[in-house]
Image 1 (tube, one colour):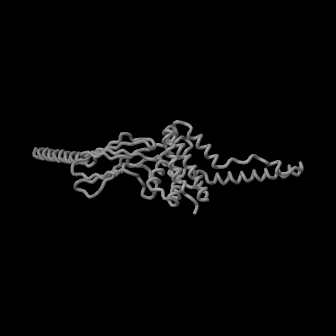
Image 2 (image 1 turned 90 degrees about the vertical axis):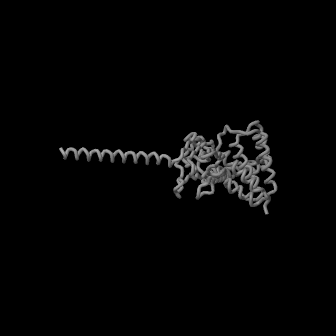
Image 3 (image 1 turned 180 degrees about the vertical axis):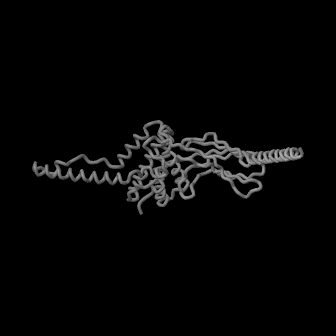
Length: 302
């Protein structure tokens, strides 16, 4: 009987210990949930250049590191992959609006530190950015920098193929001349070519005839014009230069303010990734065009 009472007593102590351990574990689990701030994304997926909205809320005594408005740059690349549009800070709450220029998955640039800790914890919230570019186009960072620079080897092959056909044409003309015994000039006489300046004037008039201009088409057209105009002014072929390299040439050869160059750099980068449907008025496009045409007009070969 005594052994039975001892056994029941031991079981009661064990049950109490188990309940105590369970309570301690539950309290620790509840405290652990307080170590993570409340984070919320309006949408886990966005399209390139669309605005993402992130909200974070924390407790008193926490230190929270928020990003500043401006560009988002990777550590080993000078190219910006996104930007912070706004940071609205309230009491223990912040709302951040940001957007990305490249597709992929990106962590929200926010971190925090607990009151009794020296370690900073980075947010694990990720935003999945999907490309808005149609199939067949590239969304890589290299294309964002130099969209005109596609297929260098393709250009070389086209040049070689053109030379090959010109040689065949010259051979056929030479054979025809001897066969017919006619002057060569009479065979290959053609109309004089249209000067490049006149060609560009016609292209510009045709491009600006619509009341609404596609930002994407305008960006590529402006880049092509700047390269042609500066190639003549500097007596150097700039057709294979990227947008960044072209703007560096302009900066080194002119007194154009850096703010102007920064503005057109961002416009070209962003506009070339926007859908074709995004437009601005003919008046805005013409004003932007005339300003840059005037800015580069004073650049000459030294």
